Image (cartoon, rainbow, N blue to C red; front, side):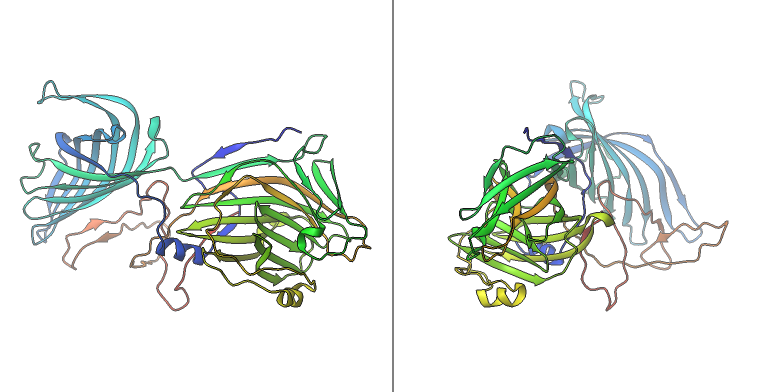
Length: 484
């Protein structure tokens, strides 16, 4: 059968699951990917098409409203060279400083400086849509930060973060340059590779394995794949002796700042099948009738975690996720309720480090699962795996050699890669006020009760979500959970 590969890319995280607080803490504490190259450049004011309105109120506070200015930006990266147009709202303070902010759009393009007084701009495609905030000192120097996303052209979906500084002088002096540094970050990654949805008439021609002298049959019908494993006269001594599985020759890899998930729907288990298994090469999870275990294979089987858990064994989704965190890999096993919008039935994360990590022995496994295995080995030292070539799934049977064939029916075998979002936390104030019908209020903020006052707009940066939460003893730790 031809493997179906369907790649979907979006700037939203798809699917259902949880990014654990443990993952967030590890990713914060440990180095992630190599930093994006720094972009440097210079900007010069080329025009103020809308000077704005300068007004002083009865308290002597001075504000500049509605100013629009245009800046010629030239950097060492063609993606951030262009024409920046910013609208500005500025409020002067009593000490002569001013706070400022607004929206800015920077169109990507080139400048012809043959006539320096009237430079000519040619757009080349794409625009950075940003918001900015800054402070102007009494001597006219500025520090400004801009963040936003690319729209169209070769920058579509990319993220830009910039800081600009301007030396002392008269405001809007075209002779004083803005000196800028910034970074471009990739668009948030979400890709879904549908390996097979088993909708055609024949089973896939993948690698197959039936353990120790067992037999395996693949039966594809009704848009689902059934794996049947049979081990007559073969008692279970080690896990692999009585496991039947199949999987494609398909390279996979996960980078720092990402998570990779293998997923498969478990449609049903027959009475002789105590477990279904899902794996990325030598990392595996087993969903038993009354337990879930996670481990790895390296010169023997190592069980890193196991929990008692009774579920119905039908219409569930098995998920095994790998998240690099520095030199470590976080293994996360999940069970989702297929019939309830992907609600999480179980979740457990374990960290695999280059050192020898804690693992369970045969007696501990027997106490949790009721099954006795020989030759379980402690976790060997060595770098965790972040790439491989064999995602697979199958059926496991614990038998004395007299049980009938074990069957597990599956659907929708997938690999999902998505970006791990970092959570920024800073001190905030939560404002609440009545909202009677027919009345609207604008929120303003200032350094003192005398002002000067600036409007506070709940403006969302494209691609970023913000939420103000109360600081109390109930909420001290936060996490991001993927919504179904």
